[in-house]
Length: 487
Image 1 (cartoon, rainbow, N blue to C red):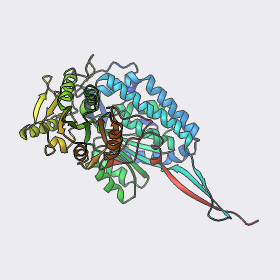
Image 2: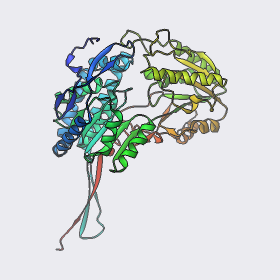
Image 3: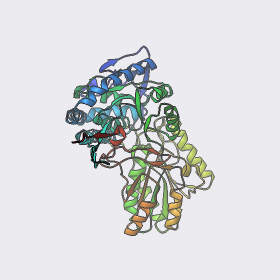
Image 4: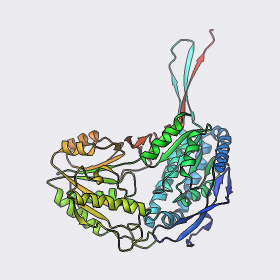
């Protein structure tokens, strides 16, 4: 078992947080470093009875938490933010060890997640209602916004710190309580947030975190339990659809951030060097393992060769390796299934006429490392253009006209993020409005921030995280009509 050099070893918690207590279990499971295969920890494998107890605790704690003033909840969340920032190095170390991304990138994720906690700490004080002019002389109408209740949160492995922070922050700010199920592959980051939440003064039962290996059973319980009012989930479209079906009988509210197949368009009037730099960020952040990663690169004929050359040059400077080592920019893929998916996309494209520019094979380091790969001559009928790769593969498709590019970009059931590079102002407006996505990056490869709404259209989900809109999904709107006595 590896020992992480943490300044505060107590952040490496392996038990579940239920009703303010750290609870073990009879069974455990192994969490390993995907870069080295070393065992990091033996984590408690919680069962369904534990989950039911956590739901009961969250339900019991919710009225008192909601009764607190927004300012009181804000103060606790602000303390959590400050603790996350103060312990960012340790949180990043835990994250890199269990997920694999480079340490600098992991610290960026921690600070990104903390920014959501800070943002919604401030929003807790600004949950405004309304007064509507009455429909009759002897009545008045008020609109109240109140918390939905207990929230079930299911978070993924690729951003194990930020995805929990991005969900718990608006939920707790609104006065909801939460039962969270982190990915079985990366539970340690979530549990470390739980440690800091307790130190920040989050009351018992308000935040419950249960590591386990029973994803489908836990999901079904959260979706069917009458005390759970809402589900927030980040993951695949397939699983999101299953959760919606399971939650239909009890009419659950849902916030879903699902799969993507992001297009990245480069027009002739773009700067090829700037576009290549943006493409590197949009494609290779987290080694291509993000839902907003660029998956399909549509490049206009006049700039095609210059862009490909610039991107290949930038990609050649990527350093693949263990994320805990100095200078590494690109870590491993999460598991062998992820490697095999990249291999499938590469082989399918080559069989149908695509060409390799760089990469195209497993990395000499072995394990789940794969070479950053650039392909040209890709067409719409290839698997890489239809399915999200979730790995370090950039597939370039040549186009001639703006209309052609938009049609190909929108030819997918997904609609989370899209990117394009152009300098003509009229084109910028046309393309930004025409792309069927929830998030558009114009001349930038980075689109996610706590101050802007994050979410997709079509089969990429529903609801928004971040910004002033992000708290709305955790609130009910109540209409209060007051009849006035006649004078």
